[in-house]
Image (cartoon, rainbow, N blue to C red; front, top):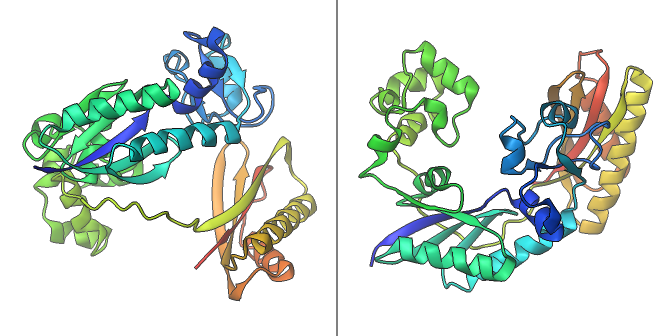
Length: 339
């Protein structure tokens, strides 16, 4: 028996749930986000493959998505529905006997000991299909990094194995931002150092990169490019690390006093919810999204862990005062972080 890590990812999960609820939408471009009105402020939560063909993607403003795909069907976000279907999916995965580590509504890592992981993966896909009628993709690896990346090569509704044996063949010539955890900024800095591909990064000097990225991040970049990663799959439920509220305004706010009032209001809402959760905060983070789409955050530590509304509101306003921008504001958020 061989130990494997599997990554299960539901294909276009939110859009797929909506199509199940509305079968007449099958085959159409479906975009889910905000309250479903592309004329209002909001971002795309997910898009069907038909909509993605027009360049629509998660995180994109709904208005932009409407310009790219004007004939799409726009639907509001329904968190309760997605959470209910997600619970069914995770229950089906646990019934397989594997160790299941949930990492989101639509994805999970599984730890198994099997001689034929592809056969086990196809069994998981059938379990999910029987329980929810949803399609899924399964990535197989010797660690979480390999399994997560393998899923991308298996989409849609496929199974793909990525291991030490085929790592270089599959990823060696790809750009470094093809790796899980390496974003555009890091990839750009790596290119400035002459490291353009995964293969080049895998052969880089960890010590040299430590000088550029720090003693932990530098060596980690090399190990990631070599396909090294954590193997442990933990089924212990993870408590939330923060709780917050956000509001997107239909018209940009240019009045600083109005911005201050909104931050104070959000902070008090968060504090009230923390009190019911009995989860004291240790710091408060304020997020401001300026027009057109520039987002910044500042945080303020609390003197002691607390759910006190006055302390949380004052910390939020202190964090707000650290913003130097005076551009019109389209979104505000207040988030309390736990220890």
